[in-house]
Picture 1: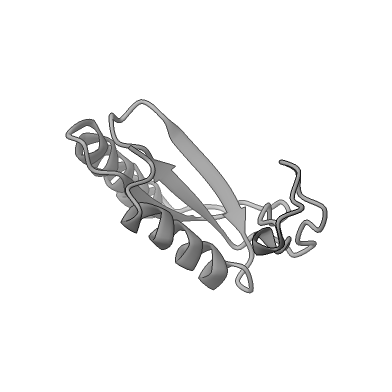
Picture 2: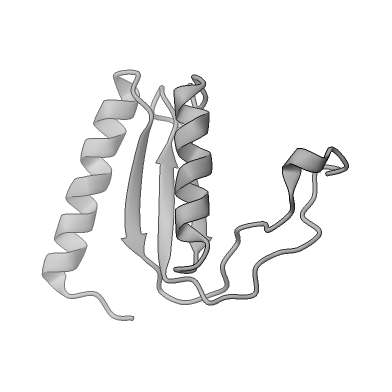
Amino acid sequence: MTRTPQETFLSDQSHAAARDLATAGTPVIVLDPATGGQCTWCECDVTIGHVEGRCATPCQGTADLVMCIYRAGGHVRTDIALCSACHPDAMTFVKAVFQAGGFR
């Protein structure tokens, strides 16, 4: 996918605002369109207790968007490529982490 100059400008502005908020102590998520590639969300059931720090069942879908997470402090950004099927699960998981005080 090729971005228009306006889309690039808006994305840059979103990321600049996210960095400012993260630097001030608020973790932030920015969603950007993906430029191709595979979804990186893991479909493992982490609640069953045998996950060993690696993903046994990665999603095979094509990434539609990238969830960019800015941790509080503003110096760490994590990008997660997601397909449309995994996006709701990823947002639910990240929301729970935020509510528990994570990404600080």
